[in-house]
Length: 183
Image 1 (cartoon, rainbow, N blue to C red):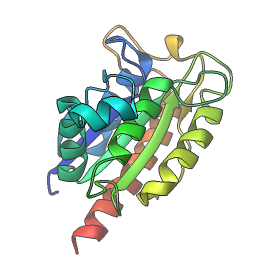
Image 2: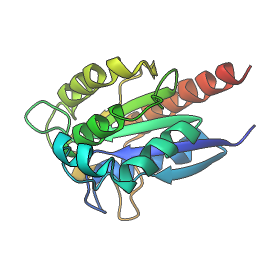
Image 3: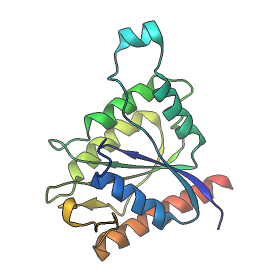
């Protein structure tokens, strides 16, 4: 099995966020990979600041990480049925850079949230936010971890076999997209 470069974007900045745990579980299930978690602690997008100073170093680093990755996994919490502001801000910043690092990039989406739907609404808004970038979105199985605080053990491992099976299926599809792209 060939080792791939996998980039993870968490829509939560908290170090112990369940979305970070979900990304780490996804990377574990993906298989042979070099996994990097991106830093989305970026200043709010401001066109005046961009005109005066250009894109911040963190934004340039994120765009480079996306470009170099064989695949990207994104996990978002759900805030009022939408993706997080942290994640939307990062997408807005990267959208300003040329060339577009997302074009034809295999991307899998997932979510972990406190509510019963596990972030399904956030995933829908994330799909809409990604569409202008023309990535190769890997659709299904949906991974939306509900009541997420109760679904990970003290080491951050998923404890629910159904969620783990869905995540394994999604990572298998993502790996197949990367392998297909390499041919």
